[in-house]
Image (tube, rainbow, N blue to C red; front, side, top):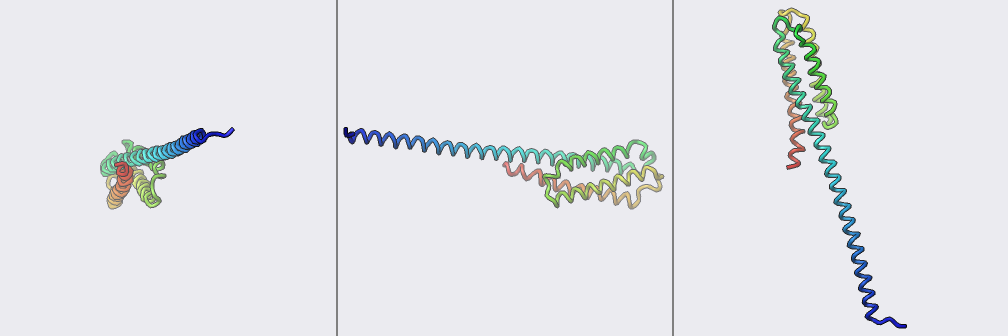
Length: 177
């Protein structure tokens, strides 16, 4: 029995319509998957950026605290009783907290930036060593050129690291704007 042209036309139209729905569905599925993957990448990047800013902000806070605390300790060096009021332990604690923050943030710094931070950490060690030594000297023996060198190297190193951290913290924030 022959099939009429009308039936063939309806069947062909139905097949083309079905093919259109299937291809449209596949295209929509592909687009949706692409958008989901892009959103996932964006969220991961955002989370990574938040962690970076958090670690660098913490390091910046510890830098401020350490520098301020050590300068206050250094300002007490010329006076009687230095070393009897916990200055050595206080300096140790400040430097230890900076070191922890430095270790956590190091992954987010370039090699050059990390070297600058490590140089500052070395300066902290020198300052701490001097503080420990001065605690056992008489008032007349303390300070002098060494005192001024330590104080200036602390302040100079602080300024360098502060600038690095401020730039690194600002960069991700500016990218979001």
